[in-house]
Length: 111
Image (tube, rainbow, N blue to C red):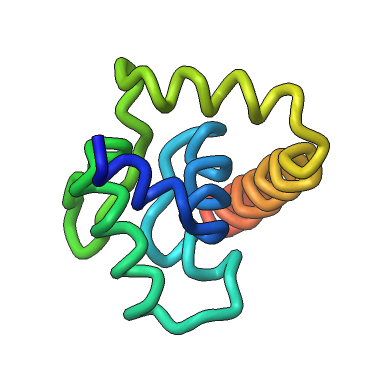
């Protein structure tokens, strides 16, 4: 339980959870949303993973991170994200960036 509270004590880690509440992201996609070094993001991801809040699965050269859906803390976090005014801009940004990436991939596949 201490690992969960330690993980949730950090603002950047709570933001990472908010981003992942919308779906899987690679470490690079997560890092692109923050103004901190990739090693610092990696440390945050490691702490969240050690607390059992997220999982990382390697696919080729990328690690895809996702929430552990059956974790009670993530369930509560999801509820809080719905009612928290801070999370709305994060969700909007996530959806907007996902749409931009899909548009780019579609353009590349038709070229």
